[in-house]
Image 1 (cartoon, helix red, strand yellow):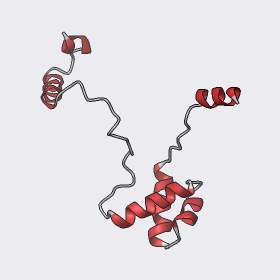
Image 2 (image 1 turned 180 degrees about the vertical axis):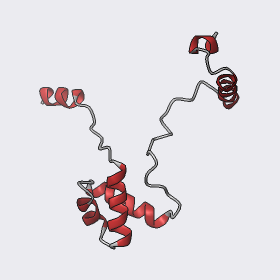
Image 3 (image 1 turned 60 degrees about the horizontal axis):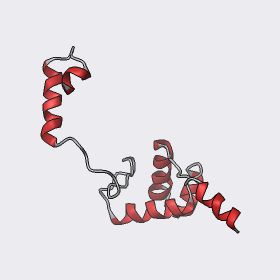
Image 4 (image 1 turned 135 degrees about the vertical axis):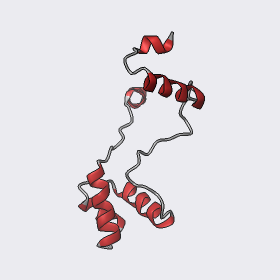
Length: 107
């Protein structure tokens, strides 16, 4: 039992990444062909059934949802170190002087 618990602790989670083509095929089969979520996921080259069901539900509830956006968990992300004003300053800095290096911007 202890060996099994050690193996489970060392395993990393595996997340599926889906390509834009797969997402577009899923939307086509689900919205145009009117297949159910599971079948749309299978036909869209192997989207997991549970993922397909979540996507179908979200497409049905939120008409403005863009399925092609990268889905990130923004709750657990660390807070950004640069403020919006810092980003604007850096953008203006590089627009005015495109030949400068990163070292010049940091110093």
